[in-house]
Image 1: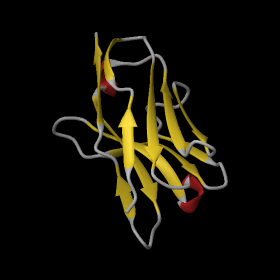
Image 2 (image 1 turned 90 degrees about the horizontal axis):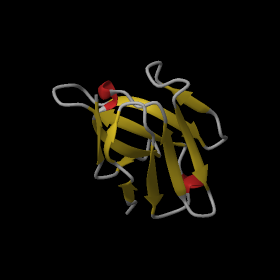
Image 3 (image 1 turned 45 degrees about the vertical axis):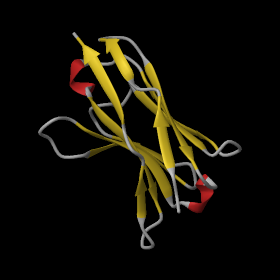
Length: 116
């Protein structure tokens, strides 16, 4: 059973930074890709940033230039560095591990609140 545990969320003022961490229970290279998603109240869950097994990254247009996804394969960790945070970044952030077609896995989520 794959387990993903997020940490690092919190309340910050606009313009500040946060770094989210995701700890995976197994090797992150066992997944096709890993990523961060978010869901704001009343909105659908959306992809924020992904990183493939090969190291290719992809970002939502709304976070390009501000957020950076990275990984530490020795520690089985994936990170999301979030800079220049905006109130519209407020959401629950979820770590995702993609092993399709076998399945996808999600963490429990961590709340990020950005005040204006």
